[in-house]
Length: 392
Ligand SMILES: Cc1ncc(COP(=O)(O)O)c(C=O)c1O
Image 1 (tube, helix red, strand yellow):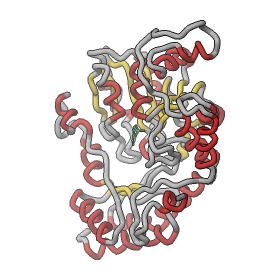
Image 2 (tube, rainbow, N blue to C red):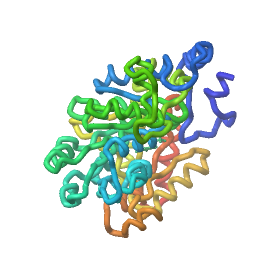
Image 3 (cartoon, rainbow, N blue to C red):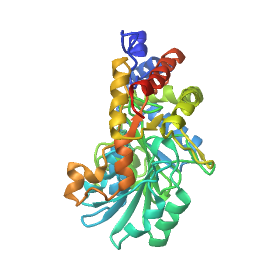
Image 4 (cartoon, helix red, strand yellow):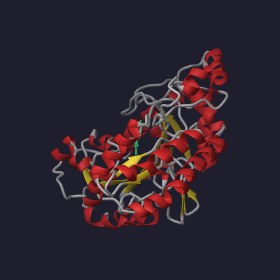
């Protein structure tokens, strides 16, 4: 049973894009949660996970959630986002970054990205700010920090909230400080594709203590149940907006097992990332392929390895080339301003030229904790073969 989960597939030659793996104590802790009789939210393992996040990151308060999407929804509720408000987001991101705000009636304002880190281009934020701007959502793409000094300066000048969508960036740092500790609120993802997972899960990091009490209420269906359990009120009741955003303690048990091995996971992923960088560097510079750029003041989270091909045609061709060799590579994101929904908010071609170009050219290589060196060598040699088939 354990081996099935570990290997995930019987096809030995097949290299998937992602594969969840166990780190050791997942079954033990899940049994512990089951045996304790407490398998709903906010049990022993939820508290342990939250404690790791608070202690390691120095975050004021961490609340586990059912996903990063839900943590973002909580952020939009906490910021009292209302119809007519505007939220500035990079167009190059996952839909949840902005959908959470649009759910509250906000209008998305799409910002282009920097051509080097693919993060929101802080130099373009100022022109997008209006009297209706309520939030800037900074996404640390690939776990490399946005230029937070500048993002925070714009926000402070205009009294706008900064939320960090740190789905990719747990344990990454900007100028020596952990990602997720800059904005008043930040969100994490523990989806299967992330460095640390419980299948589906997330967390809200609360760096401004004024949000803590209300966040607990929103996460508990709009009730003051947490205060009741702490003995602060004698009954619990409906006090605010809210929903069901807390994960089962069974999931938290799985996640805690992964957190326990955080150093091993991160160093394993670092080796994988560095192997790609080392073996593809020369090929990339010969062929006009851009590899990830990590500014000196950033420590990345080793979340993914992407490449920017010279053109859309070459990106499609290399994905097909790898697929023929039973290697799965993927691309993302479709620019949000050009999505079906984005166009309803007046998004059009040319609004975010860097995003549009990057989105056509980006490819992500297989990247997961148990990617073996032999598998990785096969991915690399397949990529290196590509030049023979392609008219660079
Ligand atoms: C930048 C970003 N934000 C949010 C999410 C949503 O995460 P979740 O699946 O935990 O809701 C993702 C998912 O990959 C993401 O890449």
